[in-house]
Amino acid sequence: MSNITSTASATVVAQEQHFTNLTPEEASVIEGGYTLNVYSLVCAADGADPWYKGKDDVYAKVTLDGITTNYGVGDMGTGDAKNLLWEFNFFENAEISFFDSDWPDSDDPLGSISVSGLTNGLQKPTIRGSGSRYKVFYDVTA
Ligand SMILES: [Ca+2]
Ligand SMILES: [Ca+2]
Image (cartoon, rainbow, N blue to C red; front, side):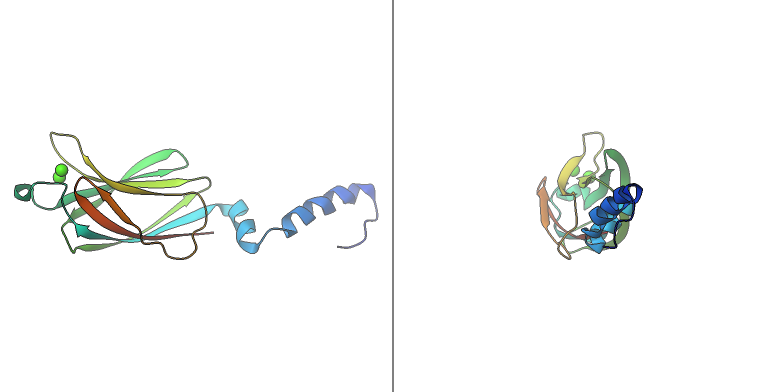
């Protein structure tokens, strides 16, 4: 750090020191938040509809810092994969809950993922619900 030449600049120097302690990734989070990248969804087992109703009718409820929006995915049966290539920006937390759409009865939950910070590389958890299993490929970047 450079020499402090006046009391007025001392405050500025203190603030700069605060930010120089951040890693480049942390600094970029403060500027622009996080990005949740959802690459693909793979169906390991579709079980949320009886056989005569066919494949799961998949959609996602995406909640970013408390605001929820629905995104369609489409029909998925065992072995199907869909490239989603979704990018969501958030600051505090993000959650994606997948559902099988039904009518007139209520939709069946397929499981969810939830993030509140950077991931250590690509994540690929298996989510389960209503007799179905899916693998979600995602990461969180700054
Ligand atoms: Ca169903
Ligand atoms: Ca259905």
